Image 1 (tube, each protein chain N blue to C red):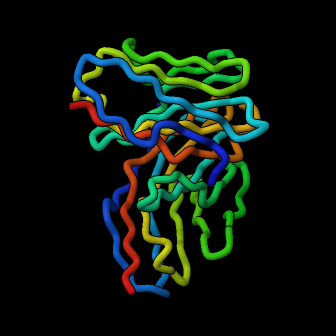
Image 2: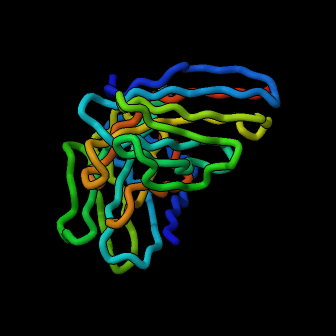
Image 3: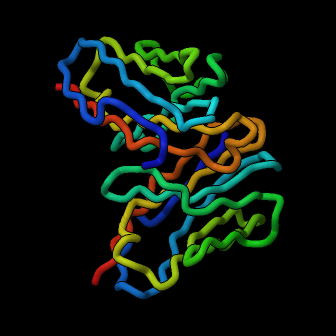
Length: 115
Length: 114
């Protein structure tokens, strides 16, 4: 157990639907990162939050949004889902952005299947 | 832009052998960090080893070591005395000092055979 908890582990939903993926960072970590792993795109950075504030944005679609709550857990919201959104979504955490250079701790991911 | 290339999609070796996974990268940054992550069938991403670009000494972690050639922008991973538990996808990644995001290569699928 890495200490980063992601729920649910698996999710199957239909095109056009909306889902929420949840992440609880490792205890003491203030920064949360979201990544998407798909067969065609590989591992892509989506977005980073630090202590509740958005810190950096990557290749995140407009249909996707995220937030980090006061208790530091984070949610990634995916809407108007398309078949191509099927992927493994990872959350990772670090103590603070300055410590990210020591490597993140990743969760075990949420496998999203859009049918 | 930073890019990472792993030229070996798949590799297979016998248990106890030594194997080297290749990684090249491109960056215009002077302050950056390089990583190898392992993704076993459980799909958990696990940090294997980390290298700071300003350090000439190659990083080692038990059976894992790197060959960091800064001028050639090469960062290979050597696994000694390979074990069945080393079977996994291995990803090379770069992170530069001003940002915290990781840019990953496409991965190398490594299989250790008994």
